[in-house]
Length: 113
Image 1 (cartoon, helix red, strand yellow):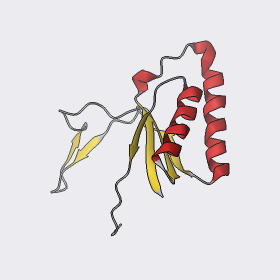
Image 2: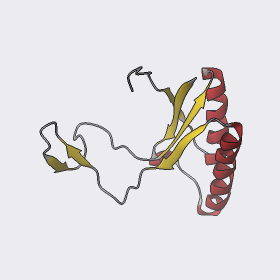
Image 3: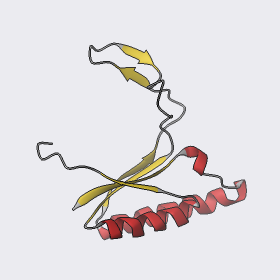
């Protein structure tokens, strides 16, 4: 089975204040269903109050991430599923719960990790 990353950037969460409670409830319900189905690996969001640091190959540390890259933020879910078709179905459930589009990617397999 492959591991799939289902994610969205913070800016995609264009939800009114009155919807936040329902979004949280619905998103937690889908994650609960993923856990019950035995496909859940991990989920969470980037803590945007903690700035990133860039650690170089020589161990030097600099504030901020890659200057040329878009910021990494938002929410992430990793599920282990038998097919891309099933991953798309779960991404659709998460999109409905979060009220925003989700990006789906598959992790490459490194047989030595």
